[in-house]
Image (tube, rainbow, N blue to C red; front, side):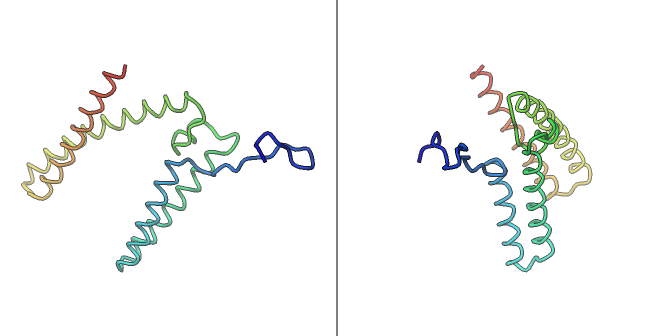
Length: 145
């Protein structure tokens, strides 16, 4: 039966629509699996918190995808309805990226002042990772136009 065919009562046949986006499905599935792994590794409290966070995140995403949800709900849940939502999310994530770079620089400066080698190493690694991702993103989007 094709999608254009109708059911016996004359109503068009509805396609099943997954309640959340593919991105959110992957994120919350991985978070749930990590929670199960934590429980199996005898980290019961952390595992339960991770599973609850994944569950509530998935429910929030499904809530944001319903008819009548606002722009802010959809953008916060990564459940974009149109190009306007995507454009707002791009600007917001760019702001987050700049903030993360600045915060990472401050964190590295603090790590150097308190002279904690592990903290300094982790801070350096995070700053380098952010800088490399920023460089690659700039290269890609400048060439793409």
